[in-house]
Amino acid sequence: MEEGVGMRGSSKLRRLAVAVLAASFAAAVSFAPAAGAAPHARVWTLTTPSTSPPARAGHAMAYDPVSKQVLVFGGYDDAAYRNDTWTWDGTTWTHQAPATSPAPRAGSGIAFDRVTRQLVMFGGFSGSGYLGDTWTWDGSISSWTRRNTPTRPPKVSGPMLFTDPVTGHVDMFGGFDGRLFQGITWQWTGTDWQDLHPANSATARGAAIAQLDQADHTVVMFSGIASLNAYDTWTWDGATWTRESPVHQPPSRFYSASAYEPTLRAVVIFGGGSGDGDLQDTWEWNGSDWKQLQPGTPPAKRESQGMTFDPAVHRIVMFGGQVNGSVVNDTWTL
Image (spheres, helix red, strand yellow):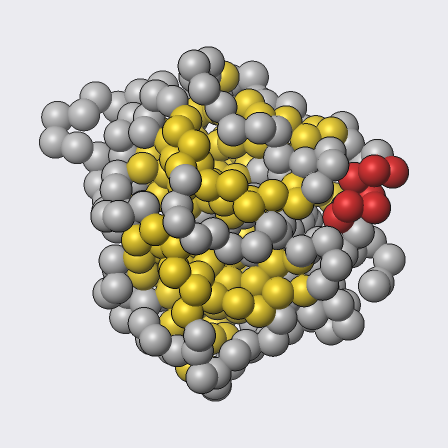
């Protein structure tokens, strides 16, 4: 394991997550503000749901338009890796009890496939090894299904999963296999993974943010961890990767979180880790440049949190993460 790849924080967390290249990447799904929905002041607000999942970090988190709920799976806490499933309806969290669940893990990637109408989750770290299994979540019946695919991408933690802007299938890029950072672009066909072999590719990395910019019809990927400098912005148009040259750019980060905000027509990112400590800044990508936002008093500095846009409340929702070396279970909206 390369120095700097493991999680920082307490010795217990470091032992638990030393190999985790985790970040929870929100699913990129197609939605717009409800007709007549009043625009809200964009300030970070701590919510107080009657029920919340146990504290965790490195969990998978995505919006499921089939069930119209936000899903959280797995992650790690102060003692172990988890494999519980929770859903958020805009008001409270509910613990789900599917008949079958993926093994405990952190650092998996998840995104919504518009063609199959399912969430697709891949990889992660179990505490003892890297994972290369594929699972789908059917929100219509609240069920996990393991997909035994003929083609198997490398076992990795910290892969970036996102909805393809052209096909609507789930694409995957990067991750860390315990020895090397990956730089392959894969696409989920509904039954198997296909190597897309784009003519131009982003440089290998893991734990970046990668989010569908629905206004620009491209995926934006920023920063992450890599053997080479990953302080850059790339876009994916469904056929090729392009390195962008924005005038402004957020500080380099990893284990950050992102969501597309349809009112802003921009991808929003918050926090993450850096070489000098965790961050608590909020930025937006407008398709050509980055701009720092000042949405009131921000949540505490953190990394490995989950974040997505929730159409039920017309806000971004963020859950959990690692704060000052300890995992938390707070829920914030923006």
